[in-house]
Amino acid sequence: MSTHVTSLTLDGLDKLSAHARRCVFWEMDPAAIHSSRGFCDQEFEKEAWLSMVMLEWGSCGQVAVMDGKPVGSALYAPPRTVPRAQLLPTAPVGADAVLLTSLRLEPAGEEQNLGTTLIQAVVADLVRRGVRALEAFGIRNTEETGPIDTTGLASATAARECSPEECMIPADFLEDNGFEIVAPHHRFPRLRLELNRDHGWKEDVEAALERLIHTASVSLVDIGERTPVGAH
Image (cartoon, rainbow, N blue to C red):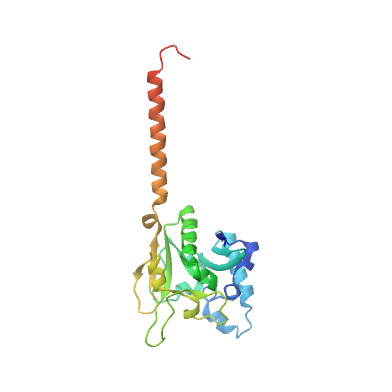
C-alpha cells in the first residue's frame, strides 16, 4: 500500500473529491449563494476560486493519494480570499496567519489517519513559505444542534449539502493536532497553530548547519597551523 501527499495544482483539480470540487461553503458569500436561487454552478465557482488563489498566492491545497487514488484533501488560503471567514463570530483571523478551511477524507484515508498527515503537509508547505501561523474555525456540538462526529473528519464522498456540520473541521480534531483556542466560542471557536514555536525543526536544522560550518572552519585553521612553513 503506497501513500503520498502532493500539493494541489491547476491541472490536478480532478484529485479532489466530488463534494470538495463543488463545495463553496468558504469560497462564496452566503448572500450571493442565496440570491442565485439555485442557479449557481458551484463546481464552476469552486474551480474559479481555486484558480484565482493559486495564480495570486500559490498552491492552496494538499491531496493524499493511496495506490494512485485520492483519499483526502486539505484546503487553505489567506483569509482575505475566504468570504465566510469574515462572518463567523470569532473572526477575524490573525493578520499573520493562513486559514485552514477544509479537511476531508475518504473512508480509506480515515482508516490510515491521513487527517494528521494532511495537516503535517500543510504545515511543511507554510513553513517553507515563511508563514508564521495556521488558523482554523472549529465546530462543536451543542444541545440544539446535536452531536458532531469528532472521531473522524467529513467524508470526502458525502452527498449532503453544504452546512457547518458538513464543511467545518471538528474543534476536538484540531486540538488533537496541536491547535490552541485563541477565540473561545460555544459553537465556533477559532484555533491557532504557531508554526515558529511548535515546528522549530527549521531553526534546529539551521543551527546544526551553523555548527557544522563552524567545526569545518576550525578544522581548516587547525590544519593550516600544523602545515610546515614552505610546504605545498
